[in-house]
Length: 99
View 1 (cartoon, rainbow, N blue to C red):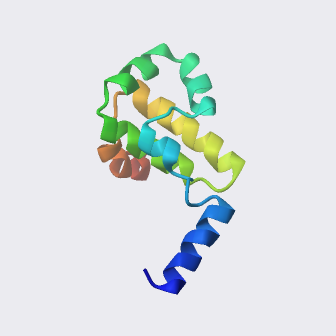
View 2 (view 1 turned 60 degrees about the horizontal axis):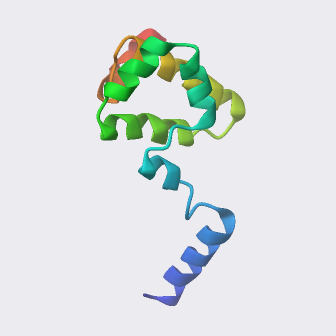
């Protein structure tokens, strides 16, 4: 690997971006999302029936939130969509028409 590439890897390891998606890849439900699911059993049951890739899509989207308020909004939207059994593949359509 070129020296510039090795530098980028070292920077990513220092700033946390190297491991930022590890939990997403492992399919770990974030604690704050799980707390929201605890209040809506139907949403969580539907979520558990989604494929690994569909769940991962929601995790990735949630992980990309930069601000805490954006993250909370996305958690609410994920729970709402899961309650309606809407899988991530359909989210662009749903987000566009729900706003």
